[in-house]
Each structure stands twice: as C-alpha cells, then as structure tokens.
Image (cartoon, rainbow, N blue to C red; front, side, top):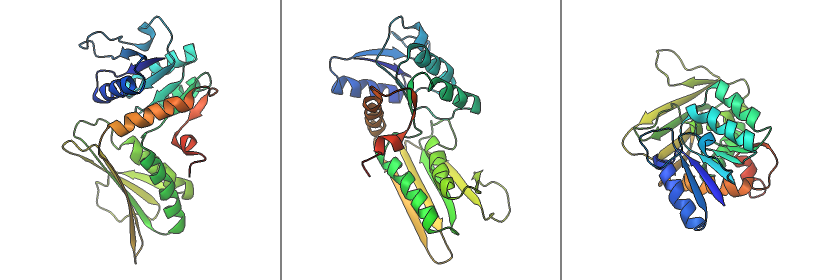
Length: 246
C-alpha cells in the first residue's frame, strides 16, 4: 500500500509516519509538506507523479484546495484531520467528496465521538439548562476554538436548533438564554481537554474528555483510512465509523 502523508514534517505527521510504519511495515510512505525547509518531501500532493491508496492530511487548512484537488482528480480516499477551514474551503471538501471518499473529522478520538453523542443526550434531557464548552490545548495550536469544540457545539445544536454560538465571552452583559458558549485555553503542552457544562439552577452535569497522547489521533486516522477502503465517493465522519458499535 501507499500512504501519502500531508504535513509530514509536523508533529502529527511524524506520529502518523511512525504508526503507519508499525502497522504496515511493507507500506510506502509519500511525505508531503509545504515547508520548503523540510528535506526529501514533495511540496504539494500534485508534485507526486504516481498514485497512492490513501491520503492522510494533518497539515494546515490552507492546504485544503491542494489536498482535495488531488483526491478528486485521482479518486483517492482522503482522511482529512485538519481543522479551521474557511467556508470556501469547506465547500471544496464538499465538492471533492462527489468524486472521492473523504473522511472529515475535527477529532479522530473515539472518546470524542462518544462525547458528541452524550452531549446530544444531555441537551435533550435538560432542555432549559445553560450549556458551556471549555477546551484546552497546547500553546502552539493555531485555530480557536478547536474543531472538536465546534463539533460538540453542533451536536448540541441538533437538539437546540435555535441556539447561537458565542465564541469567547469578552464583554459585559447577561448571558442569553439560547447561547452555547465556547471558551479556549492555550497553555503549555496540553494535548487536548474538552469539557461540556450542562447547568440548571439545581444541578450541573460535566462531561469531560482528556487526550493523553497524540498517538490516539493517529490511531483513529488509520482506522478511518481502513474504513474508507472500498467506499464510494461521499463525505464520512466519526458517526459513520461508530455506526453499529454503540
């Protein structure tokens, strides 16, 4: 098998490269990174002259056009773990999924996928509760809030379609009834912590997930790659991966 790893010189790219080598000792790894200071890598997916079996992208959302364009042109399964896409970049993902199977998730942790389900259940069980989401990551993370926090908020919105997101409360004023607030912390070397507070006047339920090692995201990405093999063109996510298991 051939795996193209985009963002190969980054931390997640290196973790992915190691895990692919462990799981598939005979696999060929095609490294791609837009950083010209990296050695022995292709700067863009299209620079590679051959075809691969799967693309794993954990680079930067600015590479969305290049990565999805290559996947669509070559009908190659794409596991897209980069977050922070603009609306225009999200549209490119949608368009590419008409030609290639794309697995797009803000977080590749099975625990987070379960947390999304629990968030929906809690929002349904406590229809009048205030809901706040707090996420913490290392001080090098670029996008705010995290894609995972947004995914959790969207899970809540499935039960509260009239709710509005408030990203970081920074002004005086009373909390509005339909708010779902997201707060971001950037500090140290925190891998990833996500908490959901569901609070009524008489009780508070806290749902929490903590990642201990970035390897868990690489494990999930390879599970997603295996899931995509043989799938028709379309857009898939962790809910599809969990289908039938919970």
